[in-house]
Amino acid sequence: MTVPRSPSTKGRLLVGAAIVLLALNLRIAVGSLGVVLGPVRHDLGMSAVVGGVLTTIPVLCFAVFGVGSHGVVKRLGLHRTASLVLAMIVAGLVLRALVHTSALFLLCTTIALAGAAMGNIILPPLVKVHFPDRLALLSALYGAALMTGATLGSVATVPLSDALGGWREALGLWSLLAIAALLPWLGQIRRDVRTDPMSSDRLAMRELVRSPVAWAMVLCFGAQAAGAYAQFGWFPEMLTDAGLSDAHAGAMLGLLSGVGIPLTLGLPWLMRLVGERPVLPVAFAALTAGGWLGVLLAPTTFTWLWAVMLGIGGGAFTWTLTMIGKRSRTSAGTTALSVFTQGPGYLIAGAGPLGVGALHEATDSWTVPLVALMALAVVIAVAGWIVARPVMLEDTLGHGPRGLSS
Image (cartoon, rainbow, N blue to C red; front, side, top):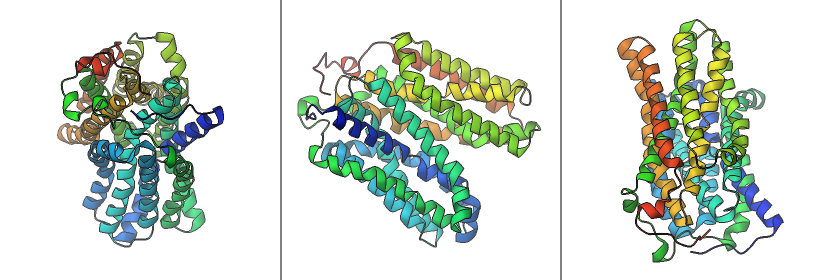
């Protein structure tokens, strides 16, 4: 295992800032597009079917390209992969602002999202390598950056479009943020880190199939992500169908999203407070189930409370990402577990909004979909209970304790 030399405080701050900037860019391509999808479809002559494909691409890219990133990291190293990720995001954002056909727009969006998918995978091993003593803190910071990036994209793109003269200028402008994030990683290429160049440190993906810890990670991450995508896709419509105005429903979705940022920043303290006990995943699951129950029984009463409960319950996302590093001894293990968790996990996530929509259409009611979402919260609790146990991935594979390589 290649490890970085002991860095100075300034060097650690630079790497930490680079990790946070990387995370900040991983949701921009998604968050910025949804709010201008109407003008994009109109200008490109995009059909409703193609528009539907466009909204599904993020989850598919996160699943498919996330799995493929394991080989890229092994060949290039973590720092070069981070540079490649941001270069792909820059290229995708710039090119999709210039093209004039639906097919090319889909292709350019896929390039940007493929980069973002690989970025999702390398965040946990980057933290494991550079901050083994600050896993929870750095995971919280990059988790908050992911949420902030998505929020920035959705909030600022329309005003930028109005100010700059159209959606092309607004979407293309976000490439500047990715370029700024790319610069520090270019400076880190000479000090690159390979997660598993030695055969003794390698963990083949097929090995993880035998690990209950790995499968618990998949279920916990997948159930949380499925619920989250269902929230972003259907929560406002649930509220408007109950009688709230579009503006009120949109504000409640904004509240739901905003609550997650300070919670994520406070997660390291909470994790230290509870130790190895499964308090947090159970609490996240209970709050999520309670929020959906409130939406079912009293959607127009204390709506802000249900939004806050769902937002706090979303803390299961950053908690699960943090546990990827805490449940693996080696950086090779962290990379393999990150791929194994997020690849299948995002496939599960894709079933969330699709399943909720199908159940709603089949029953002409939100009751069955909401019950299904509460059932997903139970999965988070059970799988999270298993993940919270102090059992390391390598031990479940029969490798036994090995020296820390981070």
